[in-house]
Image (cartoon, protein in one colour):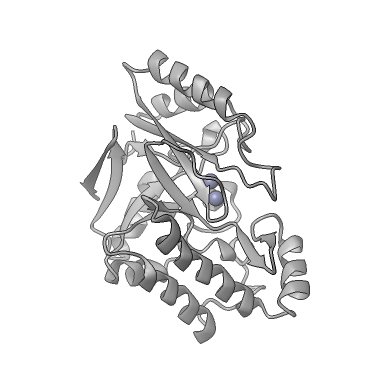
Length: 267
Ligand SMILES: [Zn+2]
Ligand SMILES: [Zn+2]
């Protein structure tokens, strides 16, 4: 049973997840969680491929699953709201995320593929990967001002395909300056995800990168473990190991949802 018994970043077949809402709920119960939040990708009219398709069916199913498993787990109704996505009128919490670089009215996804990102950098940013990172972090700063989410999703998603450093050097002053400027725009006490989606896929480490954890902490951020689960196996994956890693980076406690309440847990 994991020390942190909740995950509120969960996708299903209603958007780009592989498993149903009921299967995800059963999996969360099986690993010992007391709270599971569903966070569909908000509707983005310029890119309907991966986001919510039938919101009405989604809400009906969520209510059914919530009632059916009420004695085992608390099911929350959340959203992963893209900076350019449509906000639902009601929900339990909002994860704010940047997935696109906006340029002259067009939206370019940063997390589709390494090839795709290389093409965007080449064609839109004249081959300057740092300029793409600067645009990305500028938008993360906008998240804080325009959306004010309850949770900040994958803070440095722009590193999605940079595990081998082939796009840019995260230690370079230009990159650090952009990332830290975004960190400085988050409100005091902001909840930042420790997102384990990429780690689960075996394609790199957690978001944010380790060097950013003490920097965010120094700026007053709090942290929440997050599976960003797209299949049942991802729920709670590496939670305890990540707690150990975070402790070594100076993190003493994490926040999490227990039911609808945000609580702090020492690690
Ligand atoms: Zn996302
Ligand atoms: Zn997600």
